[in-house]
Length: 177
Image 1 (cartoon, helix red, strand yellow):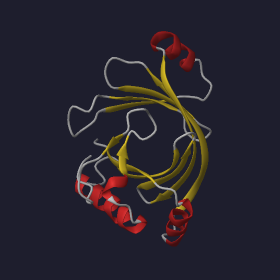
Image 2 (image 1 turned 90 degrees about the vertical axis):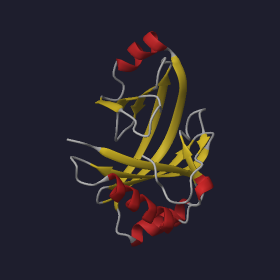
Image 3 (image 1 turned 180 degrees about the vertical axis):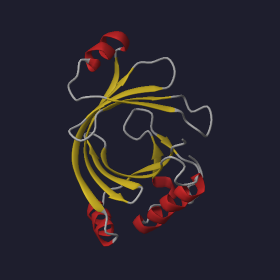
């Protein structure tokens, strides 16, 4: 089984515009999640514990040495002792708190985020589970919504919620995983 995710995030202040477009597209409203992402000091990659009222998980992401990132997920419970263990083992690099609205259209999830001290963002995540979609199909789906939301290339960012904000330097068509 192969799972592929294509995800973009963008600094975007007009959340009402996004909500209206999603409503016209008959998106399912999943709800609001208040999330705390705790990043831990690790030698390689990124280790994040997400604690939310909808979603709680531990995420390890390998360093971005190639186009394909290997990501390991472990679903956990909010307020578990896991955070204390990780804190004592690794120490905290950074804590990010956000208010996230979640919408879904088929295999595409949309996030409308307010991140304390950083501002407003939107996210588009096209998910291909068990070989259900090719990478090209997922990129096409993301490009469709990028066009609907009228995002320009300079608005796409990687790691927007940590101190590691990097601007993407690609054209308007999303062409990377």
